[in-house]
Amino acid sequence: MAAAVSMIAVYLLLLALFSGHVDAFSIMNYLCNNVSSYSMNSTYHSNVVTLLSSLSANASSSPVGFATGTIGAATSEQAWGLTLCRGDINGSSCASCLSLASDYAMGNDGKCRGVKDVSIYFDSCLLRYSGKDFLASPDEVAGEAQYSPNMEVNITVNPGRFVELAADLVGALSDWAANNSTARFATGVMNCSGETFTTTSFDLVSNIYGLVQCTPNQAPEACKACLGRYRDAMPAVLNGTAGGQVNAVWCNLRYEIFNFYGSTPPVVNLVAPPPSPPPSAPSPVDQNDAEEDGDTGSLLFDLTTGFLPDGQQIAVKRLDKDSGQGLNELRNELLLVAKLRHNNLAKLLGVCLKGREKLLVYEYLPNRSLDTFLFEPEKRQLLDWDTRFEISSILSLSSRGYMAPEYAVLGHLSVKLDVYSFGVLVLEIVAGRKNTDMWFESETNESGTLLSYAWDQWMKGTPLDAMDPSLDCQAPESEVLKCVHLGLLCVQENPADRPTMLDVLMMLHGNESNFPTPSKPAFTFALGDLSSARSDGVSQGSGVQRAAATPTPSVNGMSVSEFSPR
Image (cartoon, rainbow, N blue to C red; front, top):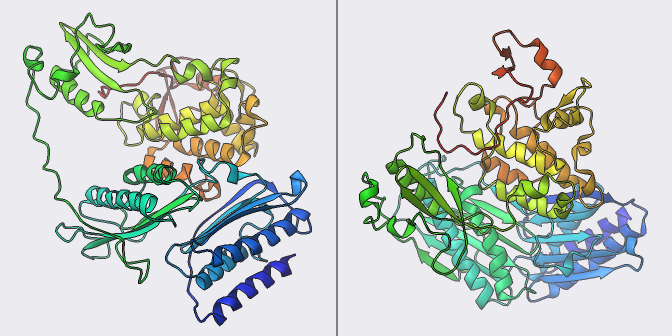
């Protein structure tokens, strides 16, 4: 069978040679989903070889460089596949690129040899095949999107502005590809020579080059929605890099500071708009003139309000009357948070200030909070694995909830506070248990926290044992392992060892095999460890002091808005 794959590769390469055109192609990303595998002498292997040969021929002869197909009779032997070539390459180059992609996946030294579910991304083509019918749901993210920032060259001046312009270019290209191209493909350039962007290689950036592509079988709105998901993530995932790309099956995008799409003339030419003027410093405001302030007047509510004028029901969060936060600080925080808009985050509608009362007004969410479902045995079965994984992705964009040890014990602030919170929440989502529930057996045969239990299972090589048993038949092992691994990395005791939230977002869409090895988390001791605490109520840990006054360590399930060290 391996010889058959090699013969296909040789045939396609010869086809390109005799067509008089050969290109150099670069591997961008690949994903081997190790949930299921096959043997080299299996019918599935034969079916994939035949399928890829057919898809390559069809795509290279297609005017839009695209082909899909399926082969096999028995369920366990069926294979579904998809191939797509970049919109600016010809048929012979398409055949050459797909030949390399096939060999990269299935050849004698193939990276995904023996794996049933595979995605291979070259700079000029992609292929995917699977033992499951992923073609039936083109609106889903087939396989995991691979985010690839340019790690060699970074923007050293105005990196935030640079990625905003890159995202604007991608947005314009997305509209053009969706509405003006049967191939769902577009290239373009943004002239930004009027601004100052320098790089770590001492270049002065004058242009940003971009490319987007969807599979041609998608409707315009579906194409725009696919590209829009990844464009929205660019400021968080690709901030500071001089180039980057997102490789996914149904759509992909890329931008660079050099022309990477060859001689193809760009269909979109933009000039960077002038940057917005910096916001003026807010002036102090008290309750008497708050309603006269044009920025906050529409956000202020009367104390008796129970419903908005349009009948919308509201939820109210009451701040501590004795809080040291003044009205000016509250106003500034309100204006900042009110600008945050995400489909999966509760919207802050306004504030009520009356006497000593400080009330935050949110949209009402009838299903209550995550813990209502996650920590109740009957209700948590309603949260399937796909839902839990999506929740983890959302939390990576806005994470708070549990105090990190450097703050809970010592009052030390750290840029990794939210990372620790996120790690605890991810492990809770995987396990369906609270970190504070002393229900787990640790290696000391004493009850321990969820972090203790997850760490014990990791060290024993059985991390999947930390998973909620109700997910056993539905959760892909690779995603569960990724979440446990990522969660343990986020709760490491030394803040310097934890990833940044940017790293977290990239890891969620990356390959778990590339993650670093975690060290022992903070607050993983069992109850028996407390007996060794010093009489002054503090025991020594590795790097920080640990409070030993109660049998429930590091517990604070509340978000903290005011960061004042103890």
